[in-house]
Amino acid sequence: MFDTLAFYFSHQIVQYAFCVAVMISLSSSLLGIILVLKRFSFIGDGLSHVAFGAMAIATVLKLTNNLIFVFPITIAAAIILLWTGKNRKIHGDAALAMISVGALAIGYLVMNVYNASSNVSGDVCSTLFGATAILTLQESDVWLCIIMSIIVIIVFIVFYHRIFAVTFDETFSRATGMRTSAYNLLIASVTAVIIVLAMNLVGSLLASALIIFPALSSMRVCKSFRGVTICSAVLAVVTSAIGVIISILKSTPVGSTIVVLDIAFFVGMALVGKATGRG
Image (cartoon, rainbow, N blue to C red; front, side, top):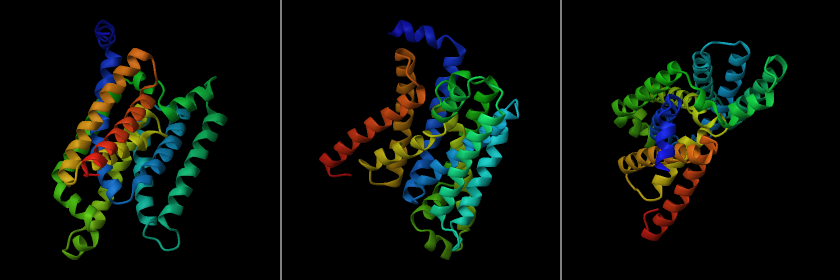
């Protein structure tokens, strides 16, 4: 087994995949805590559909770097969802359903009508579930993922106390003079960035799993915000690393393997939390 792993990890594409998987999972886990506590879990799923539509258009346009096109589109959708959530005429859940389903339909239609590839079904499956996307990353894509992940981590550390305040009591934070709208906008934008990065790892349909599962698992055994943050980060890195290794040894899809491990860890930590009375 170790000889097999050493052989695969001698290839640059596997090194890229492992590095990107760990960095994306780490940054996703930090954001997941905020989204779960603010009841924004489904925004990740909606933005992943938007990212799929943008990725489909970028593929048809044959852009050299799809992420440069997908990033602004997904961030704009996050801002729109944040704004419509405060609109009494269109409630947040309705706007989320409208944008996510519409983007998914547009993306699939565009890939079927305009895509020059002979394997449209394979392209759609790869984009939705990330079957082989992470093993086809270019060096520029890898550096972009690493840099954006580092930026997300730095933003979380620098604004940790303000994000904590906005997450737990937005009304009180606003009363004390804090610009809560600006921090909610920051959270929405960072969520969009994470979703786009996670598409390279697990595909658009499974991207929200990287955000939600580590946070939910950590909340089964930890009580403090700091404890959940640290536990979630460690758990995300461990599951992504093990998932990549298993997918190499057993030739399973990377994204699905990581998500299944997340589910297994969630069940295990839920049992531990119930047994110890912490959950």
